[in-house]
Image (cartoon, rainbow, N blue to C red):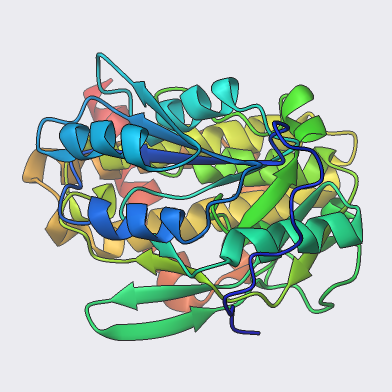
Length: 341
């Protein structure tokens, strides 16, 4: 359903923080005013907005200083050194006081009353976390993206939505900002991100959440607008930071393998890893030449680290174009490595 202007139920206890919204910013001064206006249209006495300036070098910092003064509930946190999105989110999370927590990126925005309705949804359902749909905004084109979970408004076990391996599932919808989370998950360490990851930081996070949390639900709440194609976004930059996806997925594989049901989920994790490698290889022209070479070398090494029986099964289950591309890379890089040795 589309979000209207209802701010949800009134705060029950004045002075108690019901919802903490963690919002990292880095060099997005063009978009900060719209983001802040959307926060203002969601203000409540029991909401706090943790504005994390990740050492911006443009006009972002000044806009956030004004917001700390003018936006009710705003708390400004500033990094002296740029740490990346994962680290910035952790800074906000550690300062958060709310019973519930959510995220928003500094170049995105939400509809009036969205956070109130999101909070009402998780309180009504009584689960560990709730996932929501979102609207992707590319230029003037808006596209609705749905949580890949069939039942809506029904409490489910997260680990039961990880599979099947050959279909898009809940762990593939890795956007941290597309949901709301109970404080007990933070207390268990399930909401923190791996410090220093510059891309794919949501991947180990979403997998851990689905393996270890006890309950969640998906709701058809449209009100979050994700801005795609921002020039400063790492998805648009072809430098070495993009290769952090390998470290992120290595973590997914390691932690999933250690799970009591690791064998059940490893094929899904490996298959997803291979699909991301294939995606980057297909878009190699956007990388700097040295980074493109490093991408091929690191990707081949990553495949050698994977459980080889699971790797074989995953390659056999993929479409011909991608499996051929990955097998060829594996052979070529393997032969190069032997020659160099």
